[in-house]
Image 1 (tube, rainbow, N blue to C red):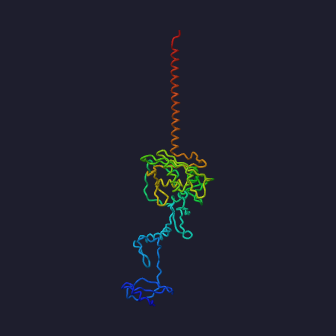
Image 2 (tube, helix red, strand yellow):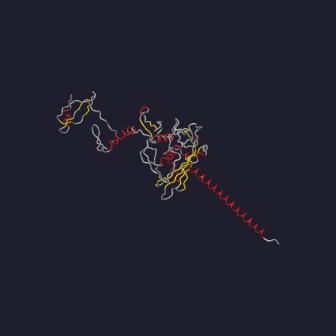
Image 3 (tube, rainbow, N blue to C red):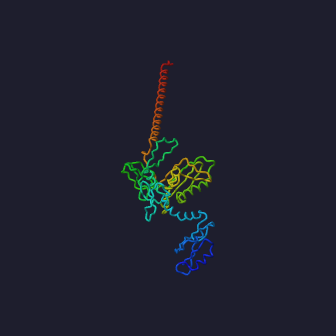
Length: 383
């Protein structure tokens, strides 16, 4: 039922509109609804609940009035919607930022994102670097491309570390003995580099010898001017600290003598605290970045600049020093080195033979001269 004062209130409103009034919630208060055209039946409907936007989110262009306040410009409302939907969109991004060679899915407890390394299926911690053993196994299991074979450049450097399918322990570290899924086996250090001669499956590797010192030797391309040593040192230390999560105390030194840069990483097992990145993993990530095969998601290679001058590396050599010396025999000599030794030995033998023959010839001449002189003395008349 309409309130008795409706007609009087309607007369005070502009012509052509009639205001509706209903009692709200049985109280004596009246709630005025929006104006409606004259002649529209006065219906009693429950009051609508209006969603109010906090005043702090309303810009100066927001049109205020009864009901839902709509913005004169849609930009503030779009920003509000983006703020509300942003976290949900981020949760759908199930990837591993520190290892692109993984398969990720929301199959963890409560829909948590979990990432597993290719080749091994081991779950990895994407907040830090993945171990080199799991990375090598992932690379070995990656599908081979159908590219044609090419002849290496004469300046190409052979990677002595090589790519093989390693055996990893439950923690993702190299096992002491590696066989590359074949009957040929060898012993490796904690970096996965071979430190003994190759043998059969009866070969025993009693322990995994730790690599405690890594020397990264770089040669950069010609620049307009030489880098400042202290600035280059600071930039490379920042790189290993921020990108590779390596504690600063493990970067022992940075040396620079244009165009050669040397980075020394040192880390003993007793120095490592829980959660510390291994220098072997940091060096391997750095090596892949230099070669333009970054393991980080969304990166292609090394992008380091010193005072706006990009650091472009054209050659990389990595040396590993173990806590115990390697155990190689003469079998390790390559065919080329053996050939050089054979040539040297043959040259020495030939030289000795030439000397012996020359001495014999000289001795024969001396004997002939001596006999001739004795004969002449005998033929002379005696006095």
